[in-house]
Length: 58
Image (tube, rainbow, N blue to C red; front, side, top):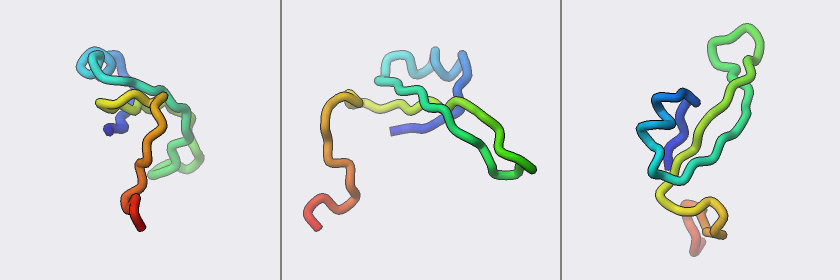
């Protein structure tokens, strides 16, 4: 799984992976929050229900 800033070049590089676009507020290094889009890429289908916890048997 990869989370990266939304940019046309990034979309082209990762076009063969599953993609999900999310809106968020950037706050680091800013005087006030800035709206932005982030792309999340993975090698699995986001629609599949998966246990993504770090310790699934805990």
